[in-house]
Image (cartoon, rainbow, N blue to C red):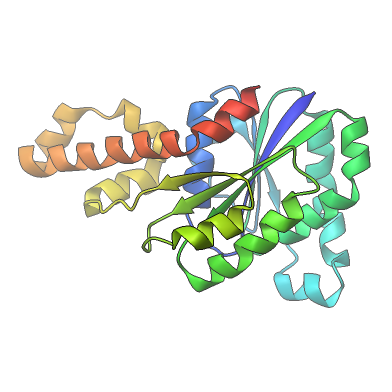
Length: 239
């Protein structure tokens, strides 16, 4: 049985790429598939197979989903060929369409001994709150297990709302992280994978002891928190 973990949310800017990067750190042997309009996980290099999504949400909706189906053929073939636990980062405006297509292939995926897990992200932003329940519902008949990650980058979501969205799924929380601008620049340039390679002495030499230490602390704390947040999903993925 090959396990494949989808990271989904149709609303952009919720931290989906950060979660995918944390999963890639937690499961270093897992190939990563990225489905998006543009490639973001550049620092993961050859680990990533990128499938560009050209059909926009309007075209998908107007065609009743037909515009998306052919777009996903390559991704689904890659899933069929997977022999190791695999992470799939599904881009904004694509998650619901992709999961709907996979839902129509549920029997075939079972026959191929492919087991699906789904990670849905939610934030306090109205768009993310609106999309998360739909994605959790789409995941329920498809996935062997579901995870809901509340990213508090825009504040906390009420506990009763999270419980309702989760509908029995495993819930973890990624705390808000206020970071120095230089720390953000390092993260954007190299992703989570670059953090464990940071040279503290060089940071201090470049920014001074106070700022350099804060940059290092901000980044190491974010990496540790992100990896703890994805631990249940990563543990399931490796079986």
